[in-house]
Amino acid sequence: MALTSNLTKTASPILISIAIVWGGFAFLESSRHLSLLIFGVLFALCAYYVVLLRGRARDAALIGASLTLGLFVIEIAVWKFGGAPTFYKEKGSWAPRPDLGWSPARPGPIHEKKIDASGRIVFDVVNTIDAFLTRKVESNSNGPTIAFFGDSMTFGAGVNDDETLPQAFADQTGRRYNVLNLAASAYGPQQFLRALELGVHDARLRRDPRLIVMLTAPWHAFRTSCKDENAWLGPSYEMQDGAPVFAGPCSARATGLSGALRNLFRSTEAYKFFLGTRERPLEPADIDLYVAILSRAGRIVREKFGAPTLILYLPDNLATPRYRLGAGYSNDDIVHKLREGGLTVLDASIDASAYPGQILMIPGDGHPSGFAYKIMAEQIKDFVAREIEPSVGR
Image (tube, rainbow, N blue to C red):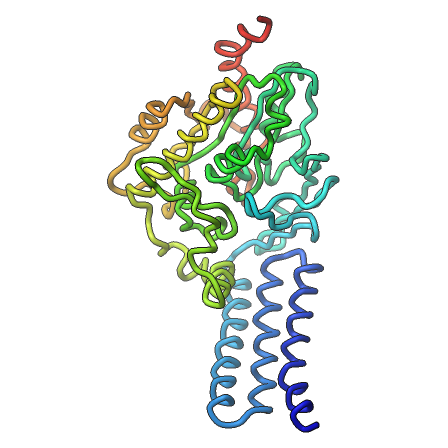
């Protein structure tokens, strides 16, 4: 009886803590609030064991309580004084998936909002997800298919459905193509390749495929090399005999409790503020892998669908210092290697001086505006007019 009572006193708080954190995942819209909840629950759990236990176990609980309380306080301090914005994503709208890492969880509208440190709304938009769990594009479902892969820029983070890059292209070409938006926030070339290897979108892509578009930048090499926190659940690749080979999820590189704690810490504001700029820089091997993944994806597109792949390339000088190329590679080197891999490359950067008074980036955010997407769509439309449309009527 005493043993049962002791087990209840010891185990019940753990189960209660798990239930509270699980509830946080279900109801809290901000990842920042979720981190604070986890630290708060861990502190309460450790404090409970400080009272319950004795000896070395009590000392360990005391250390745990001190650490989690410290992290809780630091997180709030960075949040309040570090100037970081708060993101809100409608709960239940995104979910993990084993093949690509994550994706929208259900069809229908998804409300997303970003508020800066002063309380100003940076964006407040609705993303409509279709029955295939990809972002909706109004186009001609019976026309030749042009599909867009990519990350949050292609998905359209911060803009409404009628302002995304795929939708701008569909509109500028008179909606005569079947335009697909197969991108998702925090994706990279690794999701592009893995989706092609597994045939995730094959049923839709096989409907008269004409062109695959991938918007990318050298900072995606942080994701393909698993150095970016956004890549944690996504697929990873390793070079074997000069080719990229699937090697499981990035999280497999640090499993167990240490892996979970590392992922939790990297998602905090404190980590981003103090250590985010000190992440391991890109190395030549990372760029080699990045290029190899894109080249392999282009070959699969040709073999499966007989269509070309167009790379919209954003140079690294548009990125923050952390994402700049180091020694060993330049933008010209990367573009040359991509073309050697059979890919067509267009420079997607925009000369702001050519559009005085126009907003090209969402103020307070790093994503392009709807106007910028129209300019990019114009580039793609011109390419399609030169290289794709002559073959559509054959």
